[in-house]
Length: 311
Image (cartoon, rainbow, N blue to C red; front, side, top):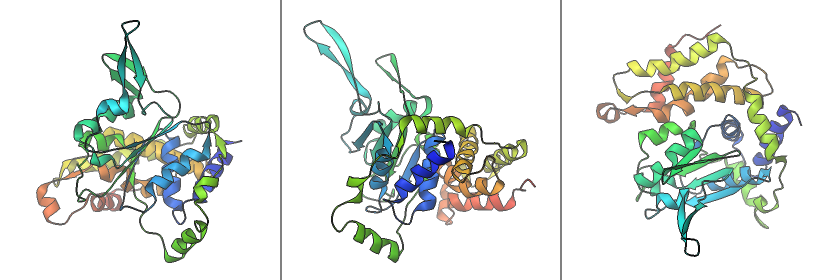
């Protein structure tokens, strides 16, 4: 299959399970093929876990692990642990669930900050260091983390460094009345996820990742991306601005979304549609700005309105 055919197959397969979320599905799949990770923040019951499972089942021959984050979860429960072999007196490393193609970190903000931070090195460098030894993460390695809104009982806010590791933060939200009625109809005699068959191979997805870098993006649009992120660094209401990692994520995601849309080049409109999901979650408002009702997404919206668009 060509990269465009693979992209269409992926999107159509996941959309057959998750109704009324075509835009969000495209962005999340684009995040996967751009090499990033996604954070889904939404109310319980909106389909976050189902979406992750649908993506995993759509890709054949891929390893999928789910970790349910709880307050008593330890870093070793995610990364793995060395166990003593009493016969040989040697320690043998038993890899944890992080060694997979797709990792669902479910309700990540219910674990302690110490456990949340166990993912930092893995998400940034595709490796984990355990007892002084480095272990590489092979294959796809795509993290889908879900979290309930931070005001929910029993949650811990993710640290800023952790938030910066996610290429995008998105949400599904509530679907329309018509789509919800269709969901009920499709699950009348069982869950459609049980009958979902793989439509693409892991090799197809890895080839799709390679094809993303072939999508053209002009020097003017790269400068536009840098200007959007750089503008956050001069806003006095922000205690933390967007990092260069945000610029890189916005460029790669713009290329990936353009591939899913069937183009071989990036347009300013694609960058603008992604800017809020890529940049907003990396920003930290001052206490005064929060008190005045500002939000990080409104900050990004103002930047988009005031930054000249390349012609």
